[in-house]
Image 1 (cartoon, rainbow, N blue to C red):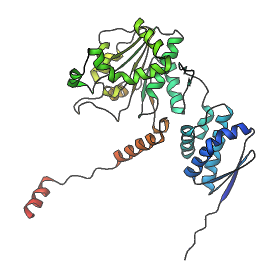
Image 2 (image 1 turned 120 degrees about the vertical axis):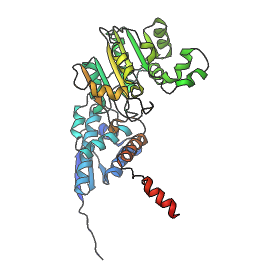
Image 3 (image 1 turned 90 degrees about the vertical axis):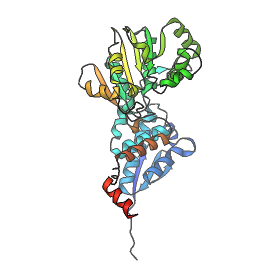
Image 4 (image 1 turned 45 degrees about the vertical axis):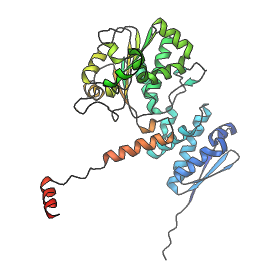
Length: 342
């Protein structure tokens, strides 16, 4: 019988502060268990020392992951499940040095005092692009914070009085002819499609403050059709679900830009609900505007997902499925021969 021996390696990570270790371990040591399960190592705590045991490659990765988490903890960052998963991903890709580049910049404070800030390197680059450019396209899968962070940036600009209005819009593609069967006037009919934008604004401003600004006309949430024929000056404008715009709608929207305004366009090119004969305005805009000055295109990935861990797994599973070749259908001649033989 042949036996295979795996040489085990030990790595030691030290922490200067017990408080940082407590933050890294998490409730009931859940963060340490996630690292152990993901990287197949054993981690033992001895006062301010962490001893990691595993094969050489896994032990090295676990050590780098723990060092990254300790760095974040020393900066006062919250160490939660999403942060641990993200750092493990960076380590496995050999990009853990990006952790030291993460800043503590707060984009916005919600009505309940919660600070909103980028949680991944991709999100940080997205926020930097919004700050530096007049038009920013945020493209990526669900759960990467495209819309939420854009709304936070809009509220921050509004509070700083760099803009006078916030305008949020999205196409009501799903409605189509069925829109007429919903009760109420046109605003009542389109409100369900704008609900994600309302939810983000409620959290940032609070329902009462949002209602006050909306009545004054300082905040507008409207379907894309309402944008036609307007020039939007001194405004922060967000177009959500842009993958469901047509080429003509996207051109119409982009040309609404006025002086002192900023535009953020968000969407996921893998979730297009348009008829097959229609070209997505977002995909077309990415192609056309790639090299235009003062326009940034930020591509977020599954690594930037900040929702439930399963969301990231679902996105990765679909990406793998789309890459698999589809078996060719049998030719008509073959089908005919098969039928005759049967």
